[in-house]
Length: 497
Image (tube, rainbow, N blue to C red; front, side, top):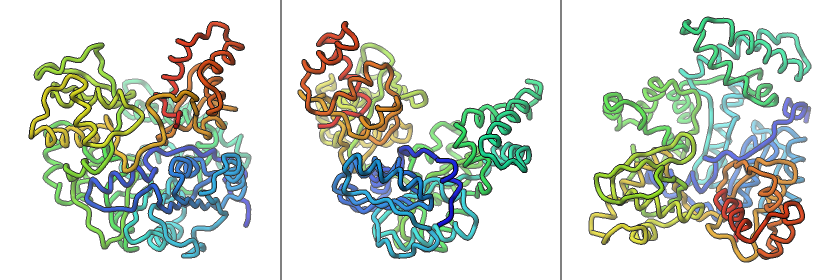
């Protein structure tokens, strides 16, 4: 096979949170679709690159079988080297063309195509959907990400400027440098009072933050063609595929819209595609991560509240106050990360968040959570509490305040006597402070001491041995200090049993 653009300019892979079968299966079950267990599933990733996403899936689901295909031979070789270094026996990376591979790979319960659809010409988009249709098992679910209008009208405007400015420049490094120079010029070429200038400056600032390899393969790529959501669904239908839901459930709720706008959208709740298209109009959406099933399945138009009982739930959401009063009528703000937040005076909701945070990154069953809230000050469990908790979890899931998963994660909530960090994180920590967690997220580990500790946590050392070895680089390390460091590692989700 001839060299591809991804051979000449490597595109480093990494995990994409919503592609993990644990999360895909949870959304599917919430919408009434029964899917194969991720624990023993066959998983296919189309356009897997160097396996940065798929290898994590294979590691966290050791009884699954994962296959990745990509046209870039150099990327596949890098991925194979990591598979070998991790001694994974359930992950195969193959150089293959999605247009010609056909049915040779067999069928899969979960098919992932992240960053492919919008970046290939129309005939290959047809080939992609045909491959998904052929490869997807009868009860399987596919994940497809793609750029959408109307949001990409803004991004496309800057992309067209960059491509015009870099016409005739063949060297990738020079192209990126010239593109960044234009971004800097355009960003300051307008008065702050000019609405067009503010819009353009914001978009230029966003694109300027891209790493060179991303800018080269995204905004400067020969193909980057968005579609409207309804157009994507119509095309998928031609290949016997039906829209199920968004992999990122919160992105389809419209929970952050004004009440009047949300009420108007909810008039379309019987038609998820129509509602989704108008939601895109209102939010100026530019990117989707859609789940597809075979058209023979019919998903519920919205989440089925009681189905949360069949799932596991996890959250690291923290209260803004040091103490939390569970009394009704007293509001408490909970936050998770920079964007997700929820203010509630609901006693059960407050107790649930406290119980989940204490267990993070482990996930709890519905019944476990219902029992755990009493240990955090919630009173007697009454007959209506289960119904109330169902609604609390669905609402919180729609605000990215909790995660739902179909299977337990490998991450643990307490370090063992001989702490063990995931082999992937230890391998990555040799050259970077950006690591892959056991809950399929990217995390940044702050501080050289924490990185040194992670590298030592291979399961062969007890706590005292870890203190002794860390003291060689920092004499101030104490058993208490080690405990704090281990708790920090545990919260990032990199420690396993």
